[in-house]
Image 1 (cartoon, rainbow, N blue to C red):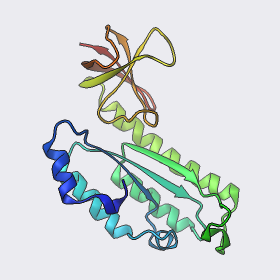
Image 2 (tube, rainbow, N blue to C red):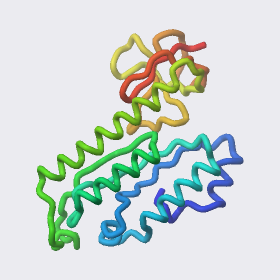
Image 3 (cartoon, helix red, strand yellow):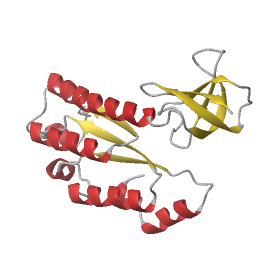
Length: 207
């Protein structure tokens, strides 16, 4: 859901409807004003900050995912540092990072200041390192809590575990909850006590 598609009416609906999961995936792409302008995005850094503040104020328990693109032509070290500072301030629940790649016919293909591949990779790894630490801290906070989990079935890693998801874990792109104690069927929504936290996944038992 792009920033332009988020308004008060939508946020009010999410806050009032318990059937709607308070989870938003907002592909921000970047926070540098000149990079966003070159990407033809109709928002800037200030707009993004205001949007995040509004989301957190209206939906305190919202889970936020975003995606950033590193290495867009003209991106500077200062732009990357601004992005890192923003990520550390916002503390996203989930974050994806990609390196920019030219596509035939894309306007940015003709831009000056193309970024070398090794620089793109280094910047990507910097952002991933920052987010991995944030994710680990966030997941650790769930240890000892009881969360509502929808059961998806046996784990893809081993038949000895069940696998499910909380409201803040989207299928295929986020981590999951691995259940090592208790029985359930796919589709069941059960209380699970979280006993361990790993880099992206949680471990728990049905209570």
